[in-house]
Length: 256
Image (cartoon, rainbow, N blue to C red):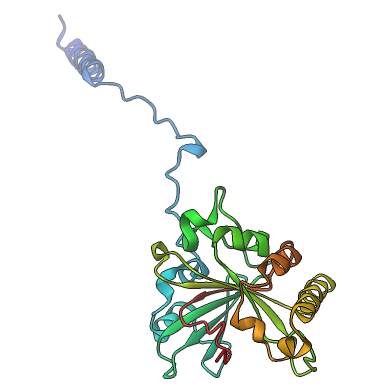
């Protein structure tokens, strides 16, 4: 073979050797499956949202809580006077009653409004029923059904004047299972239904006793006596306020 042709032959052989080596390496290398994008609905769900602040306060544990702790949770009260501290949180208006030193929560009042969505189950547990009664759906009949032995009180039913709207209250001392708390609902005597029910109650007592009996609020000293009359009258009425706590003060008139 002429010497001049050897470089070309060597070059061709080298190219084939390199090509065969590359093909062998490619064959020996495992083929990776293409990545498949996960469907959108398979993404890991976000962590559950923290409980609303109002849900953390609408509990038996709030009674006895340090007011300073409430302020850390909610922020400062909208207004405070006479040991009553008003807050607005999560669509609800809450008033917390405190002790004389304004340090410890003794009672919680919740205004029943369309914007305040609360279930009674966390507070009343099994007594709230199944499905659990919602605060907005509560009426006097349902309250009496949940907490037996409830008693009616009123701060005034006759010659009340115009200083403030009189209020009718249905109050219950809870079973031992509910931390020995007291519960109450209130309605001001301003609407036709409430005024009519209160007038029926007043007339029944005046007939059975006297006008003085009603004027002196003596009925608060024996709240169960006229229950067969007042309970049906107020049964369908929705309260304006729901209250729970200790030492609520109902039935504290001078009954001596």
